[in-house]
Amino acid sequence: MSGSSVSKVVVLMGGPSAEREVSLSSGEECAKALSGEGFEVVKIDAGPDLAERLKAEAPDVVFNALHGRWGEDGCVQGLLEWLQIPYTHSGVLASSLAMDKERAKDTFRAAGLPVVASILADKDEVQARHVMEPPYVVKPYNEGSSVGIYIVQEGANTPPKLAPTMPETVMVETYAPGRELTTTVMGDRALGVTDIITDGWYDYDAKYAEGGSRHEIPANIPAEIEAACLDYALRAHTALGCRGVSRTDFRWDESRGLDGLIILETNTQPGMTPTSLAPEQGAHQGMSFGAFCAWMVEDASCNR
Image 1 (cartoon, helix red, strand yellow):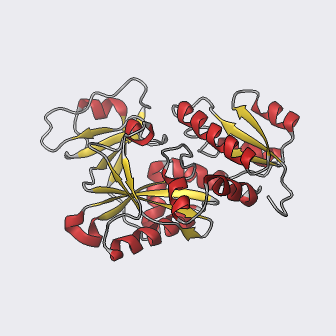
Image 2 (tube, one colour):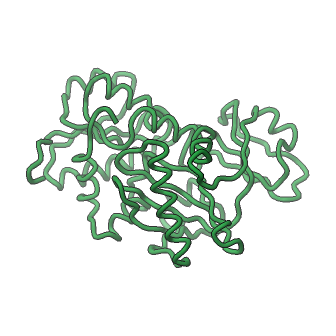
């Protein structure tokens, strides 16, 4: 922490979203790492009294370890701007834009980045008929961490039965076959490409359970595909107006070469758990988990 003016950091974690448990895990890991880097750390489980608790703690920086709605969609970012407390990751607009998957795709299309066709549809309509020719994917348009993803296979006779917890409006997108690749952007550079290897769909359990997936870094892919992932991730980060650390996820259909590489989404609050991808890519660049977290604290600001 040499030369730093930051001493007290509040780690925001938990919160009321569908990704609460993951956020608690991220927050605990980040708090432990930041303490090890010499910061005074206070953990806050975000609730309705968040503004009062932040004012009482008066931190130099807020480390945002929240995931999902309220923490990742511009809401808490707006609160922190109002309170004029410097914070990590992306600001209000980029957070909101990235979390709204359809608007994010519109931004990617405008930037010349490859995405699959998608529509927003009423949940009841999606359960009543195929709103798109199978195979397709149904997911919430404003949640992360693969919460509530349904894959409708080619040749499926019936539409999917969605959980009651799914929002009234969902995203339906063309299924993209192939390998799952991901690239972390840190500031103004892309760190690397990881190949995520699972036995099935890269869902919530595969992301967060021990042994749920294997991460191969650097990915065993052609140089052209690696270069494209790094380029696309940085361009996606820039197009959305992201700050700090983001992670862009891809699908790559090997049989189609470069034409088979598409962006799934950009995460403005990548997971920071022991099985998370962004810290792994930092480690691949020689950066310890503590140094990775400390960089985010030093990068924190308002007006993001």
